[in-house]
Length: 248
Ligand SMILES: [Ca+2]
Ligand SMILES: [Ca+2]
Ligand SMILES: [Ca+2]
Ligand SMILES: [Ca+2]
Picture 1 (cartoon, helix red, strand yellow):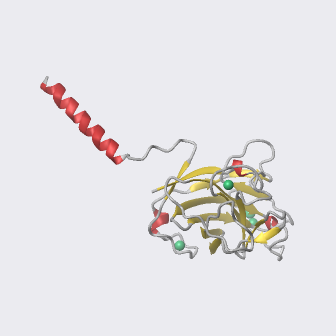
Picture 2 (picture 1 turned 90 degrees about the vertical axis):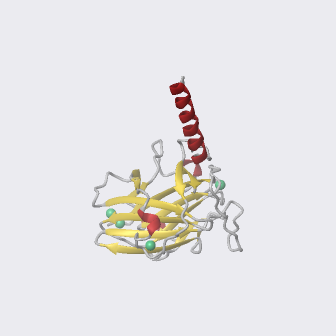
């Protein structure tokens, strides 16, 4: 009897401690936790910040366009953190040849080497080609940020994403901080970014347009598996983005 009472009291204490330390419900398995930081990184293209050192890399290994490629041609991985004002992104890209053949940053910018960031502020999914339901920011080698607007014309959104890239041989580290705008965004007007909070679900994906020697993109490699034959869907369909939930 004494043993039974001891067992029951130990169990009750364990359950009490466990439930106190897990006061937020576990995340569903179909969303990826995106961790808060109260020590935001310095955007200098160096992954030396504390907030980058205690989380794991996520792969950019899903071929969306082009033939098979070698690790020397392209290898990519990334990390994410958030604060109330920004999502921070660091991407490590191995690329054998950087190319910028279209000097006009609004002309065929996807055929120059660029990082592409997809963000759907409220994870509403759906078409975003002619709306600001979501954004597909193309960040060029010159750090200009381009995407189509509701007028179906390319525009710059340079104040949405700040980028610094460093080079170590054929490894390029792109460090970025991104403001997050919702679907009330109006081009060429004053817009207020969304204040980010724990528990918020966003749609997010990251990709790299790799061109080396031709006049059009040779590969397009992203972070998300996209089903079907035509995997070039992210520029128009926010439904293919990954689900991330902001956690503290
Ligand atoms: Ca840094
Ligand atoms: Ca390459
Ligand atoms: Ca949306
Ligand atoms: Ca390249």
